[in-house]
Every structure is written in structure tokens, then in C-alpha cells.
Image (cartoon, rainbow, N blue to C red; front, side):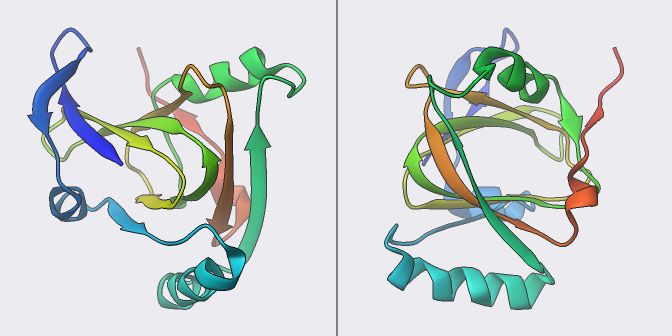
Amino acid sequence: MNATYLDHDGAPGAESITPAELNAEGVYYATAPTDPAHYQGALDALMSERGYIEQDEVALSPSTPNLDALCAKFVGEHYHDDDEVRFVLEGEGIFDIRSLAGRFMRVVVEPGDLIVVPALRHHRFMLTDQKTIRCVRLFKDQSGWVPHYAEG
């Protein structure tokens, strides 16, 4: 994981963010091995602790049909009524998450990274130039994962 605040022009700045600082912002971050025999216990514990009841896996790659159109839905600033939980198994992605003070925090996630963007927190998601990510998702209720886009 690499996390920095974005400058006012939207470029990644020099001010890095630690996992402890993410947690203080309400964004849960942890790491785990990507072998299912090792990570499933950690995910089960998180599910029990936070009330998640569903788990699935999603994969995006250059061979995904309509990848650009699909990614266009994530890049707009939005929030969900439920937490957005991702455990990255392969590839990488970029979450821009609004801090409590309103600044964007850019969090680049890679294999072994577990991130929880809290419910109602404005964010956006992009793939890196690899255009590949495979991750486990956890839900309290998949209907709570409908995006609500920011106005303007």
C-alpha cells in the first residue's frame, strides 16, 4: 500500500499517509497473505466483527468485456450506504478517499492489502496502468453497495 494526500491540482503530493493515519480517518487497512488457507480466517474474523454476511470475488483485466465503460462508473466521486471492503489478490487499484477534512487521500492497493472504505465516505476508484485487479469483496447487503454520486 502506498498512500499520499493529493495536491490541490489532483496530483499525488509528497505528504505520505501511514496505515495508522488511515485508521484514524476511519479507513480500515490491514495486510494478509494472498493464499486462501491463510487469509480466509482473517476475513471470517472481520465478517463476524463488522456484520458482513456475503463474500464474493471480482476480477477486472484488459480482457473484461466493456472494461472502460465499467471503470467509468467507479471513477466519479460517490459513496455507498454500506462499507466498501476489498482484499486484493492480484493486480492493483487506486482509491481516492475523502479525508475527514475534505482532502483526497490516494491509496494504491496491491496483493495482500485489505481496505475498508466506510459507509457514506466519498471516494472514487481507478485501475492502474496494469488494468488488472482481482479481489475478494465483503458485504453486509449487496443492495447497500449501490453508488450515490456526488453532485456537481
